Length: 292
Length: 322
Image (tube, rainbow over all chains, first blue to last red):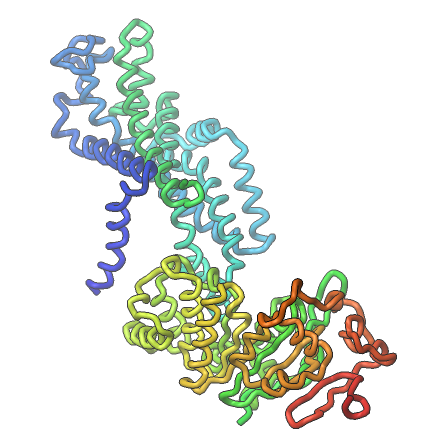
């Protein structure tokens, strides 16, 4: 049993160890992973490393500019922005992770089934997905979030609905080309059922493209979450959140306190950028046609 | 002993233009440990014949007449489950393109384990893997290759794996449909050599489908020449090469380029193969035949056995020999 698990894990480890050798794409993945891991660790450890309680009011004077005591300044309520930056990624990461998981669990199986079945199933499903795809992403997310209300799960659903069609389309198109290949037909002849064909034969072949979409999708959902929070559709006003801080700092910003908006903005860009690096890098590494 | 008997087999495809008769009244016997070469040009029905032997036709295709007796049992009357058992265990098939026949995300060993355990679910994976290793060594490859993914192998190695997978369940009959088409000439020779060795060591019957007379000359004991969906000449390899009877066979042999002769251009047979969706009353080859007679267009020729084991369907031999 131990040997078995080794043989499954080893290729994955080797893959990451050899990534830097894959040129620009590989290096991008490594940098992206580094950024995300650092931000993740920072958020998890925030109760330990934050100099102040991120939600405590009036730890310093209101709207004071960056100084030694408050490296990123304070906001209107006198909260320490530096501490809020360290802790503020939690909701965003939860929502991003959960929405990607939802997309994966719903978009991928639907894509597999639609690609494999005939018009009766594929037609309506594709029509539904295409109509979802036709909406501008943020507008659709706002509408759904407004209907569902606050909460991590509701926000994740709103974002997942926007991105499910992307997974669906990519998986479906790959299944369409793959189901005609001899190795798939051979399994059918051997008596393999639809589940075997879809999940044991075709699914592993589709995984690389899903990995690429997922990491780009995480970046997008980070930005969408920030957008929704900025618009007041966020999870909870009380907990620190980069998107909310941008919204809240806006008035101070108009009065000249640039630090209230700049730092939360940078954090969002950093997190989204980290995931984008992973996604773009992976697609370059995994797709030999893009690789020069 | 006779392993396979094909009797008066007709296979047709439903097309937009109507019924297309891809195989017509094909009959032949195949003994155990015998190799039959089926030769013909593109679209003459040889691949369809191969698929029909395993009842593997695409949905549009149908056997309209005839019997395929495998060890005395008609393949066409078997139900789905019986058919599944027969495929692989009794008869297995190797296809043209080894590149797309292997699942790119599965290791070579997993392919073997899957194939073996699909038929014998009780065999533990380790034992199936051991068997796979033995097969690879038989094919002249290292058993270390079981841990490789298909993309790590060359085309020739992949085709060896395909042959190995075909042999994994110790079938009695191996059908190889143009097994060397996707390979270069050097690898082609190696694969043919391998097939010939296996035939001897495994006591295997084989049907080799190809458009290359040179290929069958090396491996086959008997040759069937197909044209327009019918077998026009059937003979032992030596007899066929020494004295081809059907004009098409004669032309084919004449057209093989000869390095010892000084020729400036390649020869060919004028015309193109018949459109099988239209009805042709007489001999299918009549339109291109240099020795065409009056009745060739009108009356289909009957099969005659001119010499023991050498059958031909041609009006030239209506009066017993030319």
